[in-house]
Length: 353
Figure (spheres, one colour):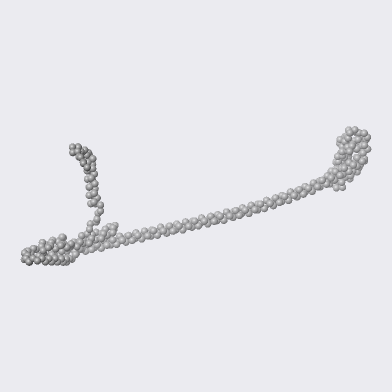
């Protein structure tokens, strides 16, 4: 494959503003990473262990070495454990002087390897070189003052008492919180009991209302039954009264019928007796009718006879009046109560029957 490149082709230059913005962003990002990497986690300062030497160590002559021994790492002091957070951390105590630690034994120098098949040559003796004296990190302090030590102990005791007081205060607050919690539980229990008693009272009231409602319904049913019984009694009494009235009416009607029949019977007997005494005039035209009003006495005797309606024929009127007088005493019923029906008797006589 052949690739041809045009050397003389001009390249487009990037814009200076865009390049500047990108460069600024890269620098800002780099600065942010540095700041975050240095400050993303803070550790409390670790404690330090200091060795205090009462006297300088004596120089030890080093033997002739063919090879320098490896350095032994010094023991690092164990950092103190961080105490739990407290309202007020105690003040750090001044470090107490510790007795000098014995110098750790130095490791033995390694043995020189044997030389192979070469005759021994006398090694040149090196002059004994005195190693430089190692200075202690911190110079020995003077012996502490007893008064200052006593003062430090008093402060330490005060700090311990203060811590105890804080612990005691915490215990009291915890106890108060527990008492408050118990009081709240007690109040809740009392509220529940009151609610239960209120619910029971409501249920009891409802039961009483139900019993009262049942008693009212029962009383209403009894009242209704009493009213129905009274209504039936009234209806029966009214029925009996109607039946009695009907019976009395029937009896009265029967009595009236009997009286009417009796009256009609005696009126017919009176009229028959009067007609038997009439001397009819012959050859009267038509069928003339005459009416007389007769007043009777209790025995049937005639007290008075008056013409109330003439037939238009004086002969027929005179013949009927004579027949009424000749028919006395007229037949009347023996019951004195019926005499009122015959006291004023209206007699009508037809010429032709």
